[in-house]
Image 1 (cartoon, rainbow over the protein chains, first blue to last red):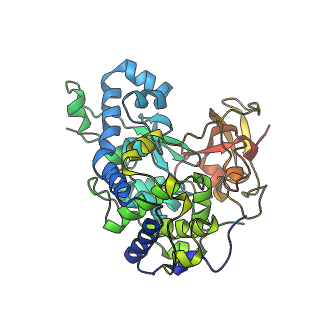
Image 2: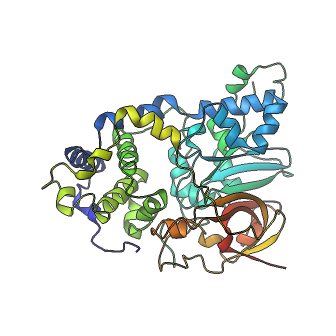
Image 3: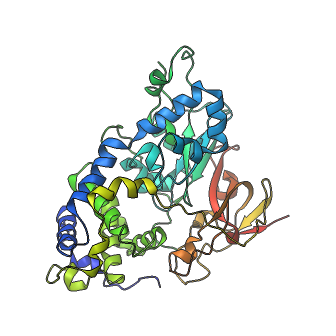
Length: 203
Length: 224
């Protein structure tokens, strides 16, 4: 039952997007179908509580702790759940690790699937047509737009998130970080390095 | 055969514009749009596959001109009317009292639990695994839903008829082609399948590059 009625109901709402959202929120609140306080709680969760520092802690710990690293690569869902990082859009996690031989990069060409409990709400570029269209066909040109150039010997493996499995890239640990602890290492792990459009920062 | 969301490999979209890590929502209405959509999802009138398909059913012209959260709003409005949660006149703001469904409205106190619970997609299935890691497979020649004409599928056009090999099995997961049309979960084995870039693109950037997609067993056939 694809809904190909040319007279889409959404055209009944105001065309200005901010007014459109307000109109929808007003109607749904009047009907008792949404609670504005619940909306505030959802926004607070993703604005202040869940974001890429969660993923950075996972990566930093994997760099420091060989046992944790092995468990993460074996069953990421269980390991990050134990750290409290589970929930919507992170129900099935797989960690993929960058090496000298392979650089991993994640996209969702069909929509914008992204590991929310570990990285939060995706950045605008991740949801853009340009990234969705190009990341699978010309990842190196896309990487160049993020200022990343890979060695000639490194292959790129792009993961198109077509199911409910979400991928976390474990970037390479930068040289010269041998003595650093988990908290200090976390600062080197950028959001983009866990999507694969960036590298971890050198100290 | 395609819908406008299926854009992997397309030419002409211009540069990707990086952005700093700190800013989550660029406009207040983006945050409201996300929250309204999640709160409505909690009413339980549709699943994630139905909601994805609603966005995909936007006209190509609307899909192209709408920003990300405008697509969410439009898909949500269409879905609310399609499922009978709102009438057209209620959506237009010209009528409406309290809905029976209101007893299921997501309350603020329940938000952390609902977001933390998620919605896992793995299910028991009687369908046995047909492939193991390393097996050579080929995807469907035509990237289309075989149950419903113009229906939802997660095989992108760029990967149709492509030869790859099984990287790993993720267990048995809900089949979106069925679930998006309320035909049941129809869970079956789901695999990560790796394809050489040269199998997908006429001008791959590098001979070692690969693309991995998560694909359901019914999308795949064994190949010699």
